[in-house]
Length: 352
Image (cartoon, rainbow, N blue to C red; front, side, top):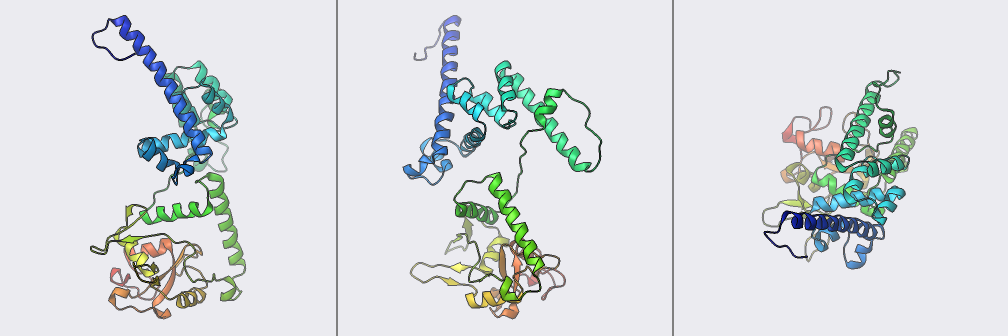
């Protein structure tokens, strides 16, 4: 029924209640259909590369709202009981959003009971209490490894729920690091998830251990082919001002200098070229045994080639002017200058 001004209190009350019920039903329908679109990746059939892009362009969502619904949809995939309640309309969007942040497959039944028996505010307070308790348990574990000291007693129900609260890991990234992160997930063909990330770290740890164990083998045995970096990102440079960006984010001075050390350059109407010839790149990697040469660093992943004397100051692509660095050390070099113990040590003026 359309809105009308100056209605009696009883009429306004009744219509407001109907509007609230309709609003709750609409929220429920949105998350159910949103999750279906995301689960089956139907957005690709509609010409969108990601659910986020689809939600922003087709649904008019803000980036924050798209991320909020995306997280909820992902959580529902691992919580079948909660998903069924949401799909049937028995559990509303607001309460579902609260409990999926703390529920696990082992505790989802308990959280469903809490949602059914509590008001929204009561449920929010219980979620906050359990999250605080879970955070306290993690801090205690980190600070007292090997000790038997226990946390002060709390409500047993809260203790049980706090044991299974999923934790969140946050990482701060530069624009270039975020572009590498997104490119790697795209290469895997999957959305970011904890299991794949842990498996990748396990594989990296295993490969580093294997490389260390075979350190006496020849350079050729442990060096990658080295024609180009194992993972590449696209960086756009303005032909007029020289500013660079990647993944829609501007590169700062440090990363802009880094990418010019070891890059493939494409210009309209010209063949692609490399800042370092592939043959020379392979030679430098073999010489340095495919290990970062910064003092104290032995990383073998995300290796880049750095110019000791910058090309802008006449530095050449001779192997004597090149050194292998991991991406983190390369960034630090351009940020702070050559570290002590390396050729060219002497401060920021030597960063190139």
